[in-house]
Length: 261
Image (cartoon, rainbow, N blue to C red):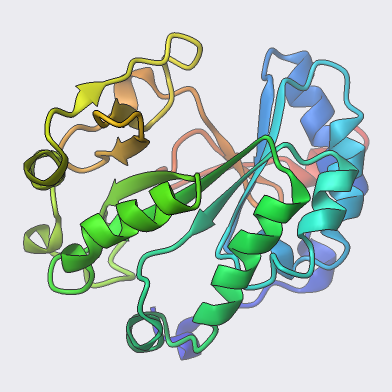
Protein backbone atom coordinates (compact mmCIF):
# COMPACT_ATOMS: atom_id res chain seq x y z
CA UNK A 1 0.00 0.00 0.00
CA UNK A 2 1.45 3.42 -0.95
CA UNK A 3 2.34 5.61 2.03
CA UNK A 4 -0.08 8.30 0.86
CA UNK A 5 -2.89 5.76 1.33
CA UNK A 6 -2.14 5.18 5.02
CA UNK A 7 -4.84 6.21 7.46
CA UNK A 8 -3.46 7.24 10.85
CA UNK A 9 -5.77 6.64 13.80
CA UNK A 10 -6.43 9.50 16.20
CA UNK A 11 -4.84 8.90 19.58
CA UNK A 12 -8.16 8.78 21.42
CA UNK A 13 -9.26 5.83 19.29
CA UNK A 14 -6.38 3.68 20.52
CA UNK A 15 -6.87 1.47 23.53
CA UNK A 16 -4.89 2.62 26.56
CA UNK A 17 -2.50 0.23 28.26
CA UNK A 18 -5.04 -0.16 31.05
CA UNK A 19 -7.73 -1.10 28.53
CA UNK A 20 -5.44 -3.57 26.78
CA UNK A 21 -4.55 -5.12 30.12
CA UNK A 22 -8.20 -5.43 31.06
CA UNK A 23 -9.02 -7.11 27.74
CA UNK A 24 -6.15 -9.53 28.26
CA UNK A 25 -7.59 -10.39 31.65
CA UNK A 26 -10.99 -11.08 30.10
CA UNK A 27 -9.52 -13.36 27.44
CA UNK A 28 -7.42 -15.17 30.02
CA UNK A 29 -10.55 -15.69 32.07
CA UNK A 30 -12.18 -17.30 29.04
CA UNK A 31 -9.37 -19.80 28.60
CA UNK A 32 -6.66 -18.03 26.61
CA UNK A 33 -3.15 -18.62 27.93
CA UNK A 34 -0.82 -16.75 25.57
CA UNK A 35 -0.46 -13.11 24.58
CA UNK A 36 1.67 -11.82 21.72
CA UNK A 37 2.27 -8.13 21.07
CA UNK A 38 2.54 -7.53 17.35
CA UNK A 39 1.65 -4.96 14.73
CA UNK A 40 2.33 -3.11 12.57
CA UNK A 41 5.28 -2.40 14.79
CA UNK A 42 4.53 -2.63 18.52
CA UNK A 43 7.68 -0.76 19.57
CA UNK A 44 6.29 2.40 17.98
CA UNK A 45 3.98 2.53 20.99
CA UNK A 46 5.81 4.65 23.55
CA UNK A 47 6.37 3.10 26.94
CA UNK A 48 5.62 -0.46 25.82
CA UNK A 49 7.55 -2.03 28.74
CA UNK A 50 4.85 -0.61 31.04
CA UNK A 51 2.20 -2.65 29.21
CA UNK A 52 4.43 -5.72 29.33
CA UNK A 53 4.76 -5.30 33.08
CA UNK A 54 0.98 -5.16 33.48
CA UNK A 55 0.42 -8.23 31.34
CA UNK A 56 3.21 -10.24 32.94
CA UNK A 57 1.53 -9.83 36.32
CA UNK A 58 -1.71 -11.40 35.08
CA UNK A 59 -2.54 -14.74 36.75
CA UNK A 60 -2.98 -17.55 34.26
CA UNK A 61 -0.73 -16.07 31.59
CA UNK A 62 1.41 -18.92 30.31
CA UNK A 63 3.40 -17.05 27.67
CA UNK A 64 4.10 -13.44 26.76
CA UNK A 65 5.89 -12.70 23.48
CA UNK A 66 6.51 -9.91 20.99
CA UNK A 67 7.00 -9.76 17.22
CA UNK A 68 9.01 -6.80 15.93
CA UNK A 69 10.85 -5.57 12.86
CA UNK A 70 13.83 -5.10 15.18
CA UNK A 71 14.61 -1.50 14.30
CA UNK A 72 13.81 -0.14 17.77
CA UNK A 73 14.62 -3.31 19.67
CA UNK A 74 18.18 -2.35 20.52
CA UNK A 75 17.04 0.47 22.79
CA UNK A 76 14.16 -1.51 24.31
CA UNK A 77 15.30 -5.12 24.66
CA UNK A 78 16.60 -4.98 28.22
CA UNK A 79 13.63 -2.96 29.53
CA UNK A 80 11.22 -5.41 27.92
CA UNK A 81 12.99 -8.41 29.42
CA UNK A 82 13.09 -6.85 32.89
CA UNK A 83 9.37 -6.03 32.57
CA UNK A 84 8.57 -9.72 32.05
CA UNK A 85 8.65 -10.32 28.29
CA UNK A 86 9.66 -13.94 27.74
CA UNK A 87 10.13 -14.41 24.01
CA UNK A 88 10.78 -12.24 20.98
CA UNK A 89 10.47 -12.85 17.25
CA UNK A 90 12.38 -10.54 14.92
CA UNK A 91 11.75 -10.08 11.21
CA UNK A 92 14.87 -10.56 9.08
CA UNK A 93 14.10 -11.05 5.40
CA UNK A 94 17.57 -10.29 4.07
CA UNK A 95 21.17 -10.05 5.19
CA UNK A 96 21.86 -7.37 2.59
CA UNK A 97 21.26 -3.77 3.57
CA UNK A 98 20.70 -2.64 -0.01
CA UNK A 99 17.88 -5.15 -0.43
CA UNK A 100 16.11 -3.91 2.68
CA UNK A 101 16.43 -0.38 1.36
CA UNK A 102 15.03 -1.38 -2.02
CA UNK A 103 12.17 -3.55 -0.77
CA UNK A 104 11.19 -2.02 2.57
CA UNK A 105 12.45 1.49 1.90
CA UNK A 106 14.41 1.38 5.14
CA UNK A 107 18.10 2.14 5.54
CA UNK A 108 18.14 0.72 9.07
CA UNK A 109 19.33 -2.81 8.43
CA UNK A 110 22.15 -2.23 10.89
CA UNK A 111 19.62 -1.37 13.59
CA UNK A 112 17.87 -4.70 13.00
CA UNK A 113 21.13 -6.58 13.50
CA UNK A 114 21.85 -4.50 16.59
CA UNK A 115 18.38 -5.35 17.88
CA UNK A 116 19.06 -9.06 17.46
CA UNK A 117 22.31 -8.70 19.41
CA UNK A 118 20.55 -6.70 22.15
CA UNK A 119 17.86 -9.37 22.46
CA UNK A 120 20.51 -12.03 22.93
CA UNK A 121 22.28 -9.93 25.55
CA UNK A 122 19.00 -9.31 27.40
CA UNK A 123 18.54 -13.05 27.96
CA UNK A 124 15.11 -13.81 26.52
CA UNK A 125 13.93 -17.38 26.96
CA UNK A 126 13.66 -17.83 23.21
CA UNK A 127 14.49 -15.72 20.15
CA UNK A 128 13.21 -16.50 16.68
CA UNK A 129 13.85 -14.93 13.30
CA UNK A 130 11.04 -14.65 10.74
CA UNK A 131 11.99 -14.57 7.06
CA UNK A 132 9.36 -14.13 4.36
CA UNK A 133 10.81 -15.78 1.25
CA UNK A 134 9.91 -14.10 -2.04
CA UNK A 135 11.00 -15.40 -5.41
CA UNK A 136 13.28 -12.94 -7.15
CA UNK A 137 13.87 -10.91 -3.99
CA UNK A 138 15.54 -13.04 -1.34
CA UNK A 139 15.04 -16.71 -2.28
CA UNK A 140 18.76 -16.86 -3.09
CA UNK A 141 19.45 -16.09 0.59
CA UNK A 142 17.43 -18.93 2.08
CA UNK A 143 20.53 -20.89 3.06
CA UNK A 144 22.46 -17.78 4.13
CA UNK A 145 19.67 -16.85 6.51
CA UNK A 146 19.69 -20.34 7.98
CA UNK A 147 23.46 -20.15 8.42
CA UNK A 148 23.11 -16.77 10.15
CA UNK A 149 20.54 -18.15 12.56
CA UNK A 150 22.63 -21.25 13.25
CA UNK A 151 25.78 -19.21 13.87
CA UNK A 152 23.94 -17.03 16.40
CA UNK A 153 22.05 -19.83 18.15
CA UNK A 154 18.66 -18.61 16.94
CA UNK A 155 15.70 -20.43 15.40
CA UNK A 156 14.79 -19.34 11.89
CA UNK A 157 11.24 -19.59 10.59
CA UNK A 158 10.69 -19.33 6.86
CA UNK A 159 7.30 -17.89 5.90
CA UNK A 160 5.65 -18.44 2.55
CA UNK A 161 4.85 -15.11 0.92
CA UNK A 162 1.13 -14.59 1.38
CA UNK A 163 -1.49 -12.23 0.04
CA UNK A 164 -2.55 -9.53 2.48
CA UNK A 165 -5.52 -8.02 0.74
CA UNK A 166 -3.66 -6.79 -2.33
CA UNK A 167 -1.43 -4.41 -0.36
CA UNK A 168 1.78 -6.04 -1.61
CA UNK A 169 0.85 -6.82 -5.24
CA UNK A 170 1.16 -10.50 -4.38
CA UNK A 171 1.31 -13.09 -7.17
CA UNK A 172 1.26 -16.90 -6.83
CA UNK A 173 4.48 -17.14 -8.84
CA UNK A 174 6.28 -15.15 -6.13
CA UNK A 175 5.68 -17.88 -3.55
CA UNK A 176 8.61 -20.14 -2.64
CA UNK A 177 6.83 -23.18 -1.30
CA UNK A 178 7.49 -25.32 1.74
CA UNK A 179 8.43 -28.18 -0.59
CA UNK A 180 10.98 -26.04 -2.45
CA UNK A 181 12.55 -24.82 0.78
CA UNK A 182 12.86 -28.33 2.18
CA UNK A 183 14.41 -29.56 -1.08
CA UNK A 184 16.96 -26.74 -1.09
CA UNK A 185 17.87 -27.26 2.57
CA UNK A 186 18.03 -31.03 2.21
CA UNK A 187 20.34 -30.76 -0.79
CA UNK A 188 22.81 -28.73 1.30
CA UNK A 189 22.59 -30.35 4.72
CA UNK A 190 21.25 -33.87 4.19
CA UNK A 191 18.21 -35.44 5.82
CA UNK A 192 15.71 -32.97 7.26
CA UNK A 193 13.80 -34.51 10.15
CA UNK A 194 10.27 -33.34 11.09
CA UNK A 195 10.12 -32.25 14.71
CA UNK A 196 6.53 -32.43 16.04
CA UNK A 197 5.72 -30.19 19.00
CA UNK A 198 3.04 -31.93 21.11
CA UNK A 199 2.98 -28.96 23.49
CA UNK A 200 1.84 -26.62 20.69
CA UNK A 201 -0.28 -28.64 18.24
CA UNK A 202 -1.94 -25.49 16.88
CA UNK A 203 1.30 -23.59 16.23
CA UNK A 204 1.42 -22.29 12.63
CA UNK A 205 5.03 -23.31 12.08
CA UNK A 206 6.16 -26.83 11.30
CA UNK A 207 9.54 -27.44 12.92
CA UNK A 208 12.40 -29.44 11.43
CA UNK A 209 15.86 -30.57 12.55
CA UNK A 210 19.09 -30.86 10.57
CA UNK A 211 21.61 -33.67 11.16
CA UNK A 212 23.72 -31.36 13.37
CA UNK A 213 20.71 -30.57 15.59
CA UNK A 214 19.89 -27.16 14.12
CA UNK A 215 16.14 -26.49 14.35
CA UNK A 216 14.18 -24.31 11.94
CA UNK A 217 10.54 -23.82 11.07
CA UNK A 218 8.34 -23.22 8.03
CA UNK A 219 5.00 -21.44 8.07
CA UNK A 220 3.36 -22.74 4.89
CA UNK A 221 0.37 -20.44 4.99
CA UNK A 222 -0.15 -20.63 1.20
CA UNK A 223 0.57 -24.23 0.19
CA UNK A 224 -0.42 -25.93 3.47
CA UNK A 225 -2.94 -23.69 5.25
CA UNK A 226 -3.43 -24.37 8.96
CA UNK A 227 -6.87 -22.79 9.32
CA UNK A 228 -8.51 -25.99 10.52
CA UNK A 229 -6.48 -26.07 13.73
CA UNK A 230 -5.73 -22.39 14.23
CA UNK A 231 -6.60 -21.21 17.75
CA UNK A 232 -5.53 -17.57 17.48
CA UNK A 233 -7.41 -14.32 17.34
CA UNK A 234 -6.26 -10.70 17.12
CA UNK A 235 -7.23 -7.46 18.83
CA UNK A 236 -6.18 -4.33 16.95
CA UNK A 237 -4.85 -1.17 18.55
CA UNK A 238 -8.30 0.41 18.35
CA UNK A 239 -10.03 -2.52 20.01
CA UNK A 240 -11.43 -4.47 17.07
CA UNK A 241 -11.40 -8.21 17.64
CA UNK A 242 -10.78 -10.49 14.64
CA UNK A 243 -11.11 -14.26 14.91
CA UNK A 244 -9.02 -14.59 11.71
CA UNK A 245 -6.30 -12.51 10.08
CA UNK A 246 -8.32 -12.59 6.86
CA UNK A 247 -11.66 -11.73 8.42
CA UNK A 248 -13.37 -8.86 6.62
CA UNK A 249 -15.23 -7.74 9.71
CA UNK A 250 -14.37 -7.70 13.37
CA UNK A 251 -16.15 -7.06 16.65
CA UNK A 252 -15.80 -3.69 18.33
CA UNK A 253 -14.64 -4.24 21.91
CA UNK A 254 -13.66 -0.63 22.59
CA UNK A 255 -17.15 0.78 22.99
CA UNK A 256 -18.43 -1.78 25.51
CA UNK A 257 -15.10 -1.60 27.32
CA UNK A 258 -15.38 2.17 27.71
CA UNK A 259 -19.03 1.96 28.65
CA UNK A 260 -18.06 -0.35 31.48
CA UNK A 261 -19.94 -3.38 30.20
